[in-house]
Image (cartoon, rainbow, N blue to C red; front, top):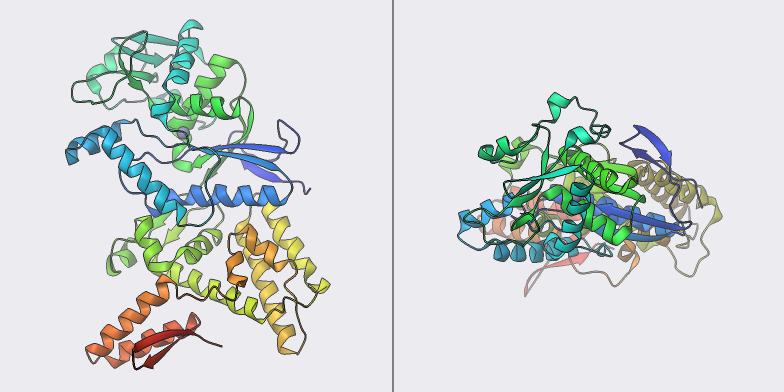
Length: 455
Ligand SMILES: [Zn+2]
């Protein structure tokens, strides 16, 4: 096993992955709040942790990955009210859609995807433990965490007390709090909210932060190995998760806190493009899953990542380069040892704070060197190339029967046809060239145009 190092947001340094139990990695990553269809930004942590899991498994670890679905939350009540449906109905439909959309990424599912609505007994237990220990108090049917009782509060986000004032979106209830930093663990039922659960301090529903503390502990125990999520969750969500669990249990929640950067939309380019590609489903329709996964790999998980049609087109071309190289390999030839250094570079990069852009560079250097050898008449086997592709979820690129035009090619072919229909031959030619760059040839047959893989 390689030594794996990851950047830990809590200590602010790269730390060796030292797991609670030898050979096992337990990961909890915060999933979406299901009040609207998931957008491309929601897909980033999904992809990062699915690929991290593949890498850790490749290294011989047994991985348990938990990604929750927040289906009880103010945002859901607000959106349901606006659409005139029940919050249950909206959350149910949006979680189903989240599953369908992320399934299309082809990276498998987490081991557990707990829903807050199904975790209420554990949440109530945790709140009771906090009240008993003096870290929380009931007021007006709500329960608040007493921030002043936990001196380490702020250690993750490194904020001053003034910067940690928290609002629960209902200013009328702010006076129930002992201090403006205190945050809600339980919210009393309000008129118009259509879900509530009985609790010792009154009917209501949990606050967002306590949901994750309770679900993580139930499925992974305490002091588990990696807690992840988007950088936008550091404060208050993760700061509060740490406070709740450590105050109640006296043990750290997790060993390493891993945060992914945000996806930034290039608004200018987006406004010129067709359709709303901000939604994961539409981005998948337009660019296909391979291009989308390749796009995420191109950026380091900790950095922001710009989302634009150009970035996705680039990613689609990269995928085609791999596919074309794969087609030149001879499955019956031995994997050449001379290409082994690329394999090592690939995995070493992943072991170094999961540096996917450096791993991707090693992969493409491998393709370049491999193509050079093939051009000079050498035969190359598949060797470690299949293993590397598996670790990024692209092993199917080596399958010669995987010849169905993807959605990108279909779209371009459609656009070419439309342009020809309007007599706009310049555009039609440009679309044909784009298809050629992606490895497709358009053959005009009696039955209409047909896409054929270029030899
Ligand atoms: Zn969470």
